Length: 225
Image (cartoon, rainbow, N blue to C red):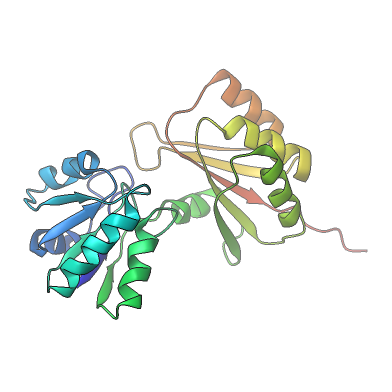
């Protein structure tokens, strides 16, 4: 069985009892960064082999994990934080397991973008999760133009290195829309900022951020004729 196990996005206490039970019962744990996952497993006394499975070895390591599953091994798949398969290489091994008719199941838990959406106060009945926008400005602007007529709440992940450029592109393409940026969710220095792009650009120029950020964008309401 392949167990897709959601793990805490920051606070180690945000793990389910079932997730701990599964991690203690499997034959091995496949994770993005063994050093990162070791912090979690050590905290809960989980003594299982850790196997690295990340973006640059997912093809070779994926075949290895599929072979173990076919041999009858139980494997838990975790990401560095949150739910595997969302904007991380976990999607690849899940696809391989399905293609090979291998059993898999999901152990639910935290997902960062859902928390950010709820905290934003923006409409939650209809939304789009875009993951990471393109890294190059030209491609990023094209994608934002494509989304300019979208009426649903938009959610993006972004790195601290690109946040200023992304905010500048949002301002240029979409104007002074309402944004909520969530950083370090569930951690000691959790930060939730609601403002327009221009104000957020100034904020992050003066306060360079650390850690991955989540951008929640409320589309402008259309004025009825």
